[in-house]
Length: 220
Image 1 (cartoon, helix red, strand yellow):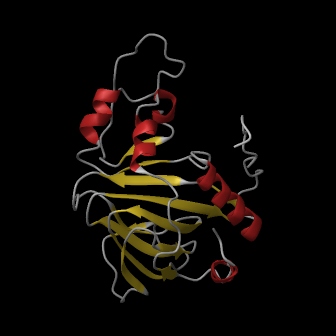
Image 2 (tube, helix red, strand yellow):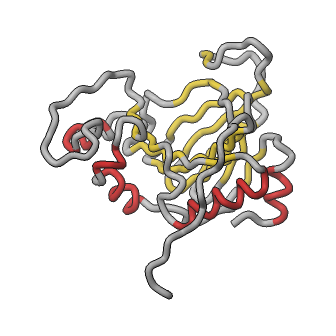
């Protein structure tokens, strides 16, 4: 998935955008499976970007009681942008891309799955910076990304506006990628129903990366 040219570009650790670069990484059908898998919708992994606090009653046979009830998820995902963290082993292709990025950068890498089911939801990600490098792959739909310069020391992590022009101002479409280095200001807003995966690479992570061994149960 990572060509020599793309690998070289990533190792510059500068913002860049490329069209039609990574295809067939994940699907809406796979997302539907995750949303219906109770352990995967733990409140530690699944986030609804609403600003609300959610509570629910316990149910029988649950190994993890801190999992969103399906009826609540079905209602809220129609209103807000949502995402899964800790999803690097969601399928073989995603796990392998994490493996390649870790081998390339020597930074532990995760996969965060972002989605919205409605056009131009008002609640998204305003201008902010992250504590990790991010390679973002658009799976479906369109997302408006803007990237500005690197934050100055001491600046707070979120802000409402920028006085400078963006370095990148692009509409991400299926297969497109964007690389946003650590501490670079950026924003993301859904233009349509959309699905994307962000691969955060953390320079300051002192732990060991996850095992990338993939279990196979047949020879196909």
